[in-house]
Image (tube, rainbow, N blue to C red; front, side):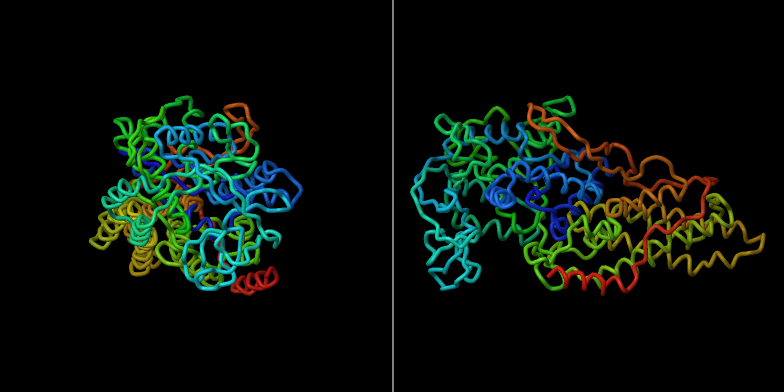
Length: 600
C-alpha cells in the first residue's frame, strides 16, 4: 500500500466552471483517486478555489463588490458543482484561509533565507486611472518581432516569442483601452536558473510521463529566467519580510501562492482530522513519506507551473538548488511523481469562451443531464492525449448507444429476468465452459482496467470495461435464457442468469471509478446494501485560525467496494429494476445548438 497524493488543479474563483475545465482537472483526478482507494492505497485528494490576483480585483471593482465577496460567491458555486459531479476530495478548500497564508509565507521565507528569492528593480505597467499594476496578459499591443497587432504582454500568440510588456508597440490595457504607464518598482524574483540543473536531472529520471508533458517541460529548461513573485496589488498574501509585510500595495503574486495550495490544503486536512502531522505521510522526503506518490492533474496550459516552477519551490525550500541551504521547519518535501496533463476540450469546433458565450457551465449541464453521462463522455472521448471536440450529437450518441443500449441494457435484462423467474439470485449449477469463459473475462478485467487507470490511460481503461459489458450482452443473446421455459430447464436458466448477474456485479465494480452514481444504483439492484461508491459532502466549517467560515468538500471514503470480484450469494432477493440511465431524444441536439446560437 502506498500513500497517494492526488493534487488537483485549483479552479479560479472568478466565475462558474464549464465542462472543458472539469474534463482536464476534475473527472480524471476523481477516476484515479477512486480506483486507488478501491485498490487499497491511502489517498489524499486535495484542492480548492484559487482566489487572489488582479482578475478577481478587476471583476470585483466592475461589480461594485469586494474581492472577498466575489470569491465567496464563486467558491460556493464551484464547490456545489464539483459536489454534483461526485468528485471525492478529502479536502476542497480555498486560498483565502489563514492556514494557506501561513504556509505560503513559510515557503517564501524559507526560499528567501536560502537565497532563491531576490529583490530587483524592474519596470511595472500601471493603470493611470486606478494606480494598480496591470498583469502582463492584460496588456495588448503590436509585437516588435512579427508585427502582430494583438500580442499580449507576456507572449505573442502569432510568432510564439516571449515578450515583456514594455517591448510592445502601442501598448494598451485590455481592461479599459488606456495606455499603461511604465514605472520603476521593486519586486521579489524567484531565481529559476538556480534550479535548472536539479530540475533537469529530476526530469531525466521521470518515467511513463505523457510524452507531450515531458518534452514541453525539458524544453523550458533551455531558457529559464528569474520570475517575479510579487505584484503591486492589495489583494493577495502579504510579503512576510520586515518593511514589506505591512505594505498595502505589495502582495505575493497569485501563481506563487496557488501552487503552494496543494501543501497548505494537505496541512489543513491534517489539522481538521485532529492529527496535525498526518500530512507528512504524503509530503515528507524523509522516512515518513518514503512510500509517498504524488500525482498532479491539470490542463496543458498549467504544465510549466507544475513541472518546473513548483519543483523549484520545493527544491529551494528543501535547500537543494545550486545555492544549497537548509530545509525549513516543514522539512524536505517530495517532488511530484507525475504531472498528468490533459489537452483541451473544444465545443462544436470552437474554443470554450465564457466571454464569447461559447460555453456550457457544469451547473447548467447537471440541471439537464446525469452526472455520469458527462463523466462517461469525458472518460471515453475526452482530451486525454489530444485536443477533443465536444459535440451534442456525439454526446447523445454515446449516451444512448453505449450507456443505455450497452451497459444499461445488460443490467436491466439480466436483473429483470432473474427477478421475474426466480425473485432472487439463482444458484450456479454445473457451469459450462462458456459460463466459465465469461466469468474469467470479467475477473481478468480487474488487472487490465486497474493497470490502465494507474497509468492514466483512462480512455483505454473504460474501453476495456465496456468490452466486458459487450461480452456479457453477447453471452446472453447466445444462451437465450428466456427460451428455457420447461421446468427441467430451470437449473440451466438459473445458471445462465447467475453468470450474467455475476458479470454485471464485476463490470459494475470496474465502472465504479468512472460512473459512481449509477454504480451505487446497480449495487442496490443486485440486492447489495450499504455504500458501494462513496460520495463527497459539503460541510460548512470555521476557519481554523479565526478567519471567516466557508464551505468545503470532504467525505468518508474508507467505505465502499474493493477492487476485486466478489461472488454473489444465491438467494439474495431481487426487485424488478428501474432504468439506470436516461435515453436522450435526438431533439436534444437541435435544442442545445439553438441554445448555443442564442447565447452567442
